[in-house]
Length: 228
Picture 1 (tube, rainbow, N blue to C red):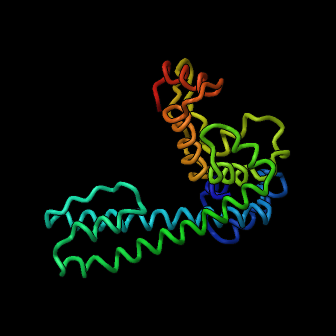
Picture 2 (cartoon, helix red, strand yellow; picture 1 turned 60 degrees about the vertical axis):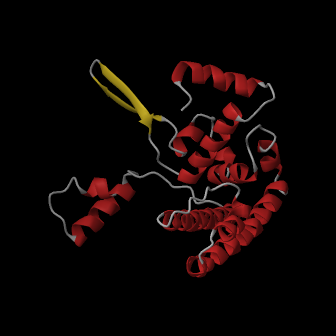
Picture 3 (cartoon, rainbow, N blue to C red; picture 1 turned 135 degrees about the horizontal axis):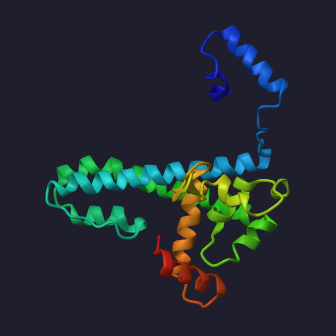
């Protein structure tokens, strides 16, 4: 509607209302799918876990960065052992007292993340489509749930081609006359689904040891186009 209203050189509320009414009358709009209540609730759970992951990562980086200025180089390592490793390496009581509140917040965040993941895993196991998606190598509960809720009702699509478009995975295209340029992906839509799909694909390429047709196909694409 904003682009449609720009066609008029006159910008008033009355004029905008007239243009919106005209657009509705002539069907110059595209219907937007409203996701089901179940999908919205599961996406809420996914967003909460993503926020806690970001918060814990910020705490970890803050602790490592501030202690580095005092000569303590603490690697990331396994997240569950990070707080214990910091307490063991810090021999300065004053620095330890200043860092302890952040360590407690970090440990509390790990407990919350475990609780949220347990809820996600329970929801994924209770869904037939998620269980089918999790049978694919590299796809876990989070990826399956994110894709499931991102698509929501699959029957609203006639073909499988639009799935890449709604998640912004189709390339940008510029064509004019004899010039046709294909760029990087559009990155529109749900960024979390794109991130998890990228993680799943990277897991198939680098961590999956078993031979399967999906890994062979992906490696052939990687040889031609690169690992990204």
